[in-house]
Structures are given as C-alpha cells and as structure tokens.
Amino acid sequence: MFWPPAWKDPKSLDWLAGTPINCLVFAAGLPESDPLRAEALRRNLAIVDWSKPESSGIAAGEASKIAWSGAQPVAAITDAVWPGIRMNSAARRDAADAGPTGAPWIDANGWLAQLAHARAPEKTVWLAGKPPAGRQNVIGENAYQLALADAAASGARWLLSLDDQLAQDLAARNEAAIARWKKLAAALRFFEERRAWAGGQSRAVVAVISTFSGGNEFLATEVLNLAARRNLLHTVLLTGQAASADLKPLKAILCVDAEAPPETLRHKLEAFVRTGGLLIAPAWAGNLSAAGKPIDSPVAGYDLRQLGGGRVAVPNAPWEDPYRVAADAHVLISHREDPVVLFNGGSLIAWYTAPPGGRGELVQLVRYTAQAQGQPVSLRLRRGYSSVNLTTLETPAGVEIPQTKVKAGVELALPPFGVFAALELRL
Image 1 (spheres, rainbow, N blue to C red):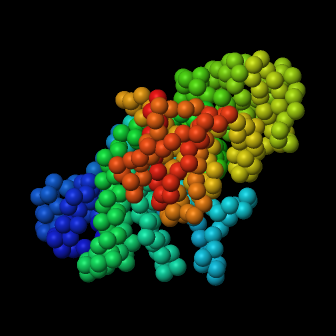
Image 2: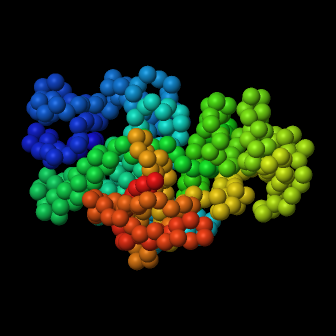
Image 3: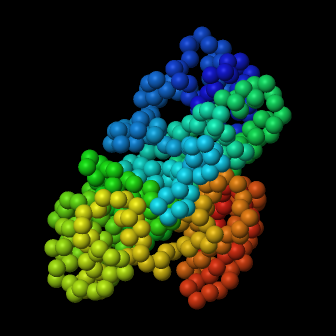
C-alpha cells in the first residue's frame, strides 16, 4: 500500500488490522527515528522506499523500461492506468469517450499484466496506477474494488493507493469513509484468499506473437489492449519463446511484427498451418502462403489461402491501425472459435484459465463501469460441466448456476453483480 502522506500518527496503522496488507510504500522512505517506522516494523510490516525500490527487490518503472531479466523478484509497472470507463474530458463530464465502434473506451491493465507475465513469468507483478486527481475525477463507490479486480483477474497485484479525500476522511473518522474502507478491506481479503486463481494457465485458443519492443512495441501492445477490450481471448508469446511453445491447443496465431521471425519459428508456424491452424501475419508470410490455394476472405484487404489443413491470411497493405488489426483478426478467426461468448457484456472483460492443482476451469469477469447494470448478462461456453459455481464480491460463499444446453454448448444466465464475478467450471 502507498502510505498516505497525511497519515503520520502510528495509530493510523490500526486501519490495516484484519487486512492482508503487509507492505507499506513511502514516497521517500522514513527516517530511522520516525515513530511510524518503528511501529510498522514492530507489527512485522515491510517498508519500501519508493525513491530506491531496487533496494527492496523491486524493479519499478514504465513497462517498456523495466529490466525484465533482472534478479528482482517484483516488477512494479508505474504506467498502469486507473481502470474504468474513460470519461469525457470536455464540458459534458457525465459522457464517456468512445472508440471507433461507438462503445465506451475501457481503461484496463490486464493486457499489461499478461505481457509482463510473458516477459518474466517468475516475477510478482505490481500495478502502480494511482487515483486520478482533480474534482472532475470523483472516485466512485466501487472504484477501489474495480482496481483490485482488474489486477487480480490478470494475475497481478494492485499497489493500493487512496485518493487524498478518502485518506483525509478516514483520518477524521468520517462514517461514510469508514464504510468504504471496510468494503475495500473485504475485497482485499476476497482476492487474497483466492490467490491460487492467479497461477492459472490460459485456455485461450489464439496466440499473439511479437518481440513487443523497439519498432514493434506500439502496434503489438495496442493490439493486445484492443483484443482484450473486444474479448478476443488470447495468450501472449514473445518471439524468442514461441519456437519452444506448445502450439497444439491453439486454433489461430497472430504474428504482428513486420520482420520475419527466425527460421526455426517459421518452420514451426508452417507445421501449425498444415495441421489445421490459421496464421495471420504480414507480408513475410506470403512466402509461406504462395504454395496455398486462394480462397475467399471474410475480411477485405487480405489474401487468404488454404495450405494443407489450415489457412494463411496476409494483409495486402502494411498494418498501421491496431484497432483494425484486432478487429480483422477476430473476424478472420471467427467468433465461432470464441471459447467464451458474452451477451450484454459491453463493459466486461473476461479471463479464461485452468487454475493449478484442480480439475476444472475458471472464467473471471471484470465490469469496468464499477456498478451493476440493468441488463442481464449471460455467457455461452463450448461445453457443459458437472457444476458451475458463481462467486462475486457480494456473494463470496458462491452459488451454483444452472446450465442451459444449446447447439454450440451451454449458456449461463448470471444474476446481477458488481465489478467482479468468477465462474468455477467443474469437469
């Protein structure tokens, strides 16, 4: 937790009682003689000096600048965004910014955490996004729970940071502020008790391959961001890792980089295509697809060819717009391949994993409006399960959800929930 500068009294540490918070981050450390430091150490709380985080084993910085191969066990990403629906900065404060589809723009960090796990799977990932400042950015009732859910669903930890007003109100023992703190503390305990979910293996059937660096960084990272927003579930593979990765569970691979990958990986991609997979890649893949039979493309501007049991899709012009790359890829792959299909889920982002140590799967849903919606949400899965248990922040004990058989699998109708819901799918 970033310790609020206004909390100088050692008794302020009482706010942490009953929470899983065990580490306090100070902007410039604390003098050895500070009573707050002495009391924190007496309570076995770790102290981090944010002016030199490396002294505490933390590699902190913008995601593109962190030394991912370093020995620090923690990577703290300082350019994480405050999650939610991006509000219009113009005079109409209640209006939301929208993307090319007209849907509200979602600020989320899951793709950032996903890329961090690919770069350094052994590191614990912290997301250090701070609350927005200014009167126009009111921190809503459930905004802190959303920040926690945004990090936890992607296997990261949120570096808790209170807005100044809440910190001041808590210091003044304002009853409404205390109620909000209790809800936040309950959410902290909820996700900490379910940390095993963070180690799940992706069940996505699409992989995005790139170096995610240098001249490839902008396009590749924005494709991840936009693919997540449209719930094109995917796994992330660095180019250097892909040659040794298991591609058998995949239906499609999107290679973003303009330059051709190493020969070993190209041969592996050809084998993937010939055994039934779809490869979407820039002009260098034309050498691979040249031997294939041209077929009609569902997306204009692509040369689509049948090669063995699979297909290769090559754009006729270089990619420039990451939105179009993500949208075109989703159509080329086909929504029929989506392992999780959401209905009325415009503000939801889904995560689909197989948690370690169990016989089952997990779908986590994060709602970025930070509030329950009037329209009911349902989802379709490709198969049935022995049981489906729904857990939310409002119903931590869980409740079993009935399954309705449909032609393409099963559909689940969900009761109203706030910012987070998890479906434990038992085989």
